[in-house]
Image (cartoon, rainbow, N blue to C red; front, side, top):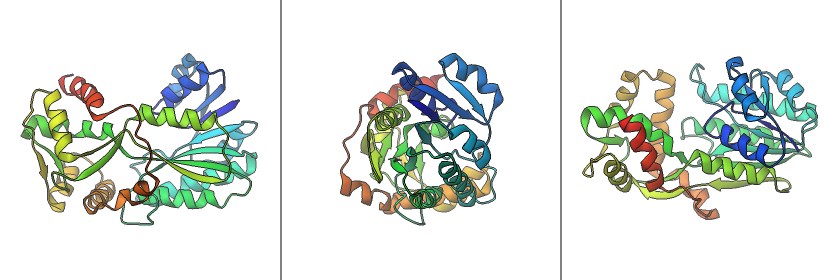
Length: 293
């Protein structure tokens, strides 16, 4: 098959492309950065350099392909994260329709069943609704859970204050996923038949924040590392002081509130997906390497 992969050489797209190429598929990788061309070609893929906001570019890239893997990259430059994600969704919808693509695997998120109160996830809810309007297009939404790699952002806090935390308390449930597990799920979906619009969840482990602090702390030689709950004000100020744009900090604060309320997991719990291979203890080894590096 000829398959289009969005996401440049990211943590999902690169291992996904490697799997597809190894399986004998012709892969084109979309990137907004021309400097990625050489790396893409070294994988054995073709590079398509352009913006996911550009429907004409996407139409040209999609035309003649058998399937696409789509995603909305984080764009911290928008005055409204939700509006920025909607613009990308509209470009996808226009290009899919104009190019005649009939098979799409699209990366969405836990909590995308909710139309608000979830921070940046709300934009993916909107994108799902936009794509659902497309006729004669089979779409599988892979709703990913919280990325393990988000904990890399806590390394400075651990080093400086000896704590890890967020605006939700110790004992809070977190369902997490490794990007490579997502790549595996996307590769499976692209190479299997499916019909209509359907949703699958991708999760690697289901733990509490208390577990997370202990496992990650043990991996870095700090087995007593505590999970600390911050107030919303403290969490917001910490993100801003770390250099996060105000709009992004506001959205991530709202997502943390959704975690605290437990509303992100309701649809997932109804579907009861099977957990994938890479557990928290496996990620802890990567975390320790990053921490010590």
